Image (tube, rainbow, N blue to C red; front, side):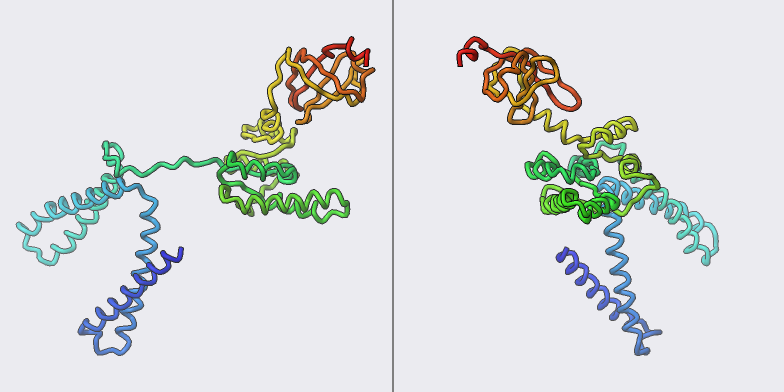
Amino acid sequence: MKKKVVIGAILGAICAFSGYLIAEQIPSFSHLWWAGWVGAAAGVVVALLTLGLEKIIKGIPLKTIVGGTLGLFIGLGIAKLASYPFDKFLDLPNLQIPLYIFFSAIFGYIGLVLGGKKMSEVSTPYFLESPKQPRLPLKILDTSVIIDGRIADIGETGFLEGTLIVPKFILEELQYIADSPDDLRRTRGRRGLDILKRLQQNSRLKVEFIEDDVPKAGVDSKLVALGLKMRAKVLTNDFNLHKVAELQGIEVLNINQLANAMKPAVLPGETLQVQILREGKSQGQGVAYLDDGTMVVIENARRYIGREVEVNVTSVLQTTAGRMIFSEIKDTAALRKI
């Protein structure tokens, strides 16, 4: 940024000095004391126009610029040929310059436009091709996924990239929660604000706070409408928002689904060492949990609540809420002796 400012300042100074000298050399203006300063001001204006033109040209592919320039020169050549008969055979000296300007404007414009467009149909060398950078889809953050906090850890691993969008109404909801009189809600809201700060400090990610609002009632409805408007993905761990967004054609990234996908695979026939913590829903069942929170249901294990047992996995059930493992105690005879 500083380099661009320095270059722009140098260009402005050169143009201003040149304009001053040019104005001083014009006979009709050289005797006026303000002529040089007007020339310098005109030079600064030309420098600003040049910098503006540079910004416009920067977004145009190189082969389009080459094709347009080539077409412009061809058009000016045709304009010269078209005005030649008028110069040669018509004794109208006052019309020569206007006619040439007229033909140059027409054929120059046609050559410039057609040259730029037709160049894309020609097989061009690789060095004229503009490098195509894939556009990463935008991701809108939901309040729940910000408060959850795992999004910051995922971002720091490098698996998440691109631009994260935080709408104004999401930020306002976080602030409302952080100002809540309830201690738990206030803590959750403040943690959400801290998570946003961590995301901002992550060099791999870009966090944008946007003012865009949509005329909808409810935060979830606004998120869905904004996702449709911006063609962005929605990052959430809200099950209901996930379903509503998918029904309307919005791609959803659910942190809970990612967490379930990262759990170690368990296959029927494998052996697990678990501690039975409580009674299950069905008669005689016991319930244990793995370190990642996966529920393990053990048949005929109610009598062993509070004990650590070895179980054989009989089946694995994957649900929208997570994964459940069904099992049975491996050696009941040995347990009865303990």
